[in-house]
Image (cartoon, rainbow, N blue to C red; front, side):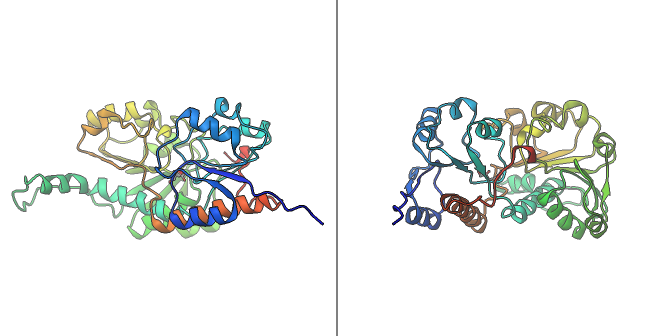
Length: 330
Ligand code: 8YV
């Protein structure tokens, strides 16, 4: 008779939706983080020492120093999120630890938020709201609160993956023309449907855009992809939005240029040193700042949790988890 298998110990670093936590406890031996504090390094080390499966989020830095202290039972890191730049994938691979993520289920929500930022910056939503709330609105005036029309503008998408493509569909409906830079050109049918123009040279694309959206993952190759030099290629009337990772833009250079009027505005949902936000950005009126909430919908979080459960369960049953991350993918 086969011996009954022990349930794996799953350590979850942050509070997840109740339904997900309940199911997690039904399926596995589960250690939750009831008060939802971001784990300290010693807490993370303790977690990787004892867990069979770790469920981290973007707020946990699972670097080589943490992974070097992983116990022999840690075999899976089932991350709650799509980006995996908080995990040292090479070290995980060396130590035989599988990493999974939750791709696909936050595409539409993040694309919505990107569109919302484009609208908010282009039409000065935050400024208008601040004016009304401050009691400073003196009434309608023909030249008050003028933004820029989106219809007819050129949108340059950096990273034409799932989210970039979902953004392009939305932007088409708003009358923008779609331009993109990506490691690989997308399929011809997709380009045709979106009437999208591929730019092999990011530099050349930037110089011709009205709005630029960062939708590529953060990897060593995309760190400060939007460097001071590249930001300077943008026309002064251009807007830039980022719902991907703060590290892709040189935040100091961006703040300097916005202040100097060398760029018209920015909409940022992500920052280089989260949760710290560059104080130079906070001072600026022409910047919309959000607390990394691009995928923050109830539906999205449940779908993400479901993916985490499926990845762990499949792995615990001896199969290849569906969302295994291969280091070369990033
Ligand atoms: C998630 C994200 O909320 O999935 C991602 O890559 O950036 C976010 O939208 C977060 O990562 C959860 O860990």
